[in-house]
Length: 243
Ligand code: SF4
Ligand code: SF4
Ligand code: FES
Image 1 (spheres, rainbow, N blue to C red):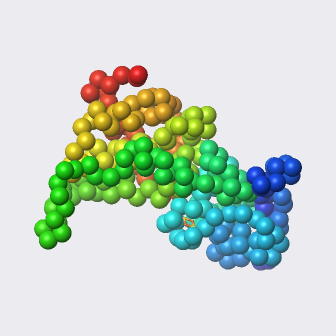
Image 2: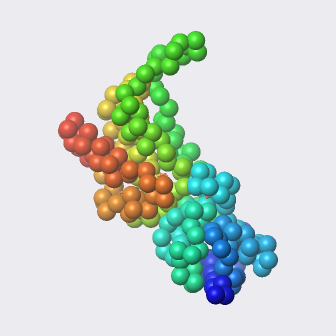
């Protein structure tokens, strides 16, 4: 059987040249066995248009660079096999982030700001003793923390989030997940009120409409539904109100 011909409709826009309006450009390439969108996009850039912008680093679903809208759904291009897609493939950049050009967006600044807002480090007065034995943690608890820690900061859950697209300061499911990760951690000595100050407002939990597009879109299955529910429950039990 001869290989399929794939037709790509790719969003093009360079903020440096605003006189060229946003548009989609069509490229055709033959499909190859086990072809990922990473391979396809490189082929297009190498053989047809060296100006095409997109981001990749690891090619293995680890770095989080290659999130984009693939036929309208957010996912990682390096993880997506063309055989699982129809022959017509539309690629758009993730919305909600600053567009750098074509399929490339600036997720780094967004995630750095979120990490600063959520103070993403263990808050403790304990002085680190490098000679001491590693402290033990309950297996189930460490697994829960590990699951929340698996976020690769790809931005897919933010790009598909209705609230994130209309509220630039919304912390997103990934931000709420980050808070929940530290709430779970017994080594972090912040009290609940300190966490709620960060997420207990319209830019956090109260801005979330709860339809779980974030959970549906996470390409590596971070349990966002459970993490959001955990923070909501904690706030309800503590009687935290919208401010
Ligand atoms: S459930 Fe909340 S955080 Fe997730 S996509 Fe919807 S509004 Fe955004
Ligand atoms: S929670 Fe999932 S979708 Fe959201 S940034 Fe992390 S890895 Fe990406
Ligand atoms: S290139 Fe790193 S996650 Fe896709």
